Length: 143
Image (cartoon, rainbow, N blue to C red; front, top):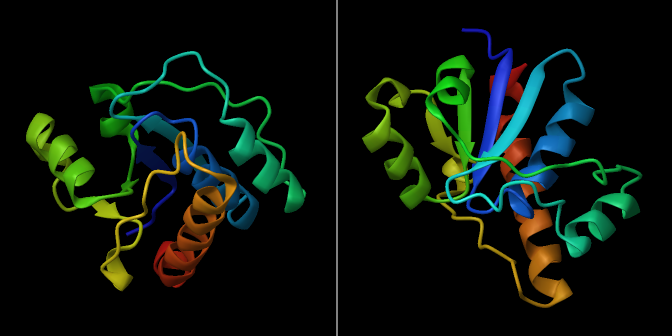
């Protein structure tokens, strides 16, 4: 199974999923990678703290614009990453065809990636590291 279209989902689509999207794009430049939120702050830019963390990695997410996940995005994706079991369940309940292709980014570590929104910088740093660790577990399964 080739995962050529990957969708990363969190709640607001301004912190965790934009960071994960950017990291995936860097690692897999030939794949189509997108992100969205289950309760997106539609039209918002990425959180300044997320922008800051990514710029330290020489990755620019300034042009990110938050959007809401919809059926079309869900259908298009070969693989959907979420940040928590709750988000996976939310997607699978709305769109049963997403079962079997929707997984928690921290699946192999059995870990949810906590939402750093409105928390201090350290919460963003932890979320970033959890995303990096989660992606590392998926890398050989995606490529």
